[in-house]
Length: 123
Image (cartoon, rainbow, N blue to C red):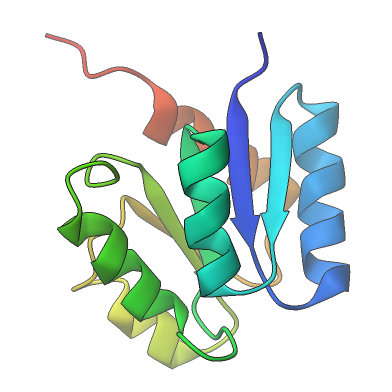
């Protein structure tokens, strides 16, 4: 069974590239273009991890991360923040995210970070 991953990004070129890399690596990929759409996809598809762009239209990625962390059903969903600006990098320090990836995202780095985040905690 493929591990489901959600990509939340409003730019088609960005999420298409990430989707292609993840699918080639064997992941099942779901895409949302807005934070509100992401909330719906998360409830329906139950992804194992979400890659969230910091600058989303409407509700931004920071608010989405905070909302997901505030609900019992999504509190333990691993989140990786992506951004092409310093504000996103700085925000990743106080947001409830497990990792930060600068844009443009290196496919090799992204896969390494996803693997690390999804690895079970070793006792």
